[in-house]
Amino acid sequence: MTGEVLPWFGLVLLCAVVAIVWALRLTPPRVSTVPADRAVCGDEPTAMAWCGECAGRRLSAVHADGAHTCLTCLTTTAGAL
Image 1 (spheres, rainbow, N blue to C red):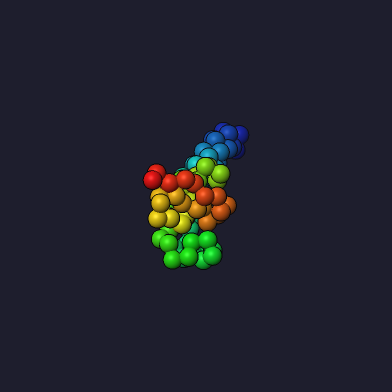
Image 2 (cartoon, rainbow, N blue to C red; image 1 turned 90 degrees about the horizontal axis):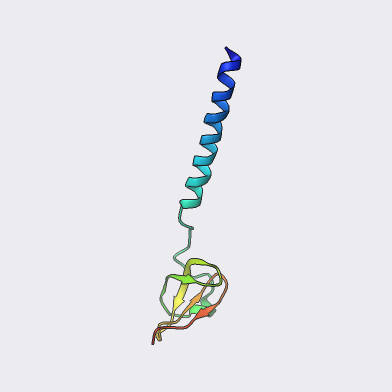
């Protein structure tokens, strides 16, 4: 009986590990609503925006001209205006 159960247990364990890793990769990054660097954003609003340097959506300071500065790597992306 043990010889028949162990291969299935290994398969179920492998599927569980794959499912957990897949679920963790799909969870959105946790960000604070309080800007980490007041010197960068001052009184400007913050929003999630695409950062090419980080290759993902990050919390950014949104400037009046439409540009935004990533609060993770401090890269400024040109605005639309």
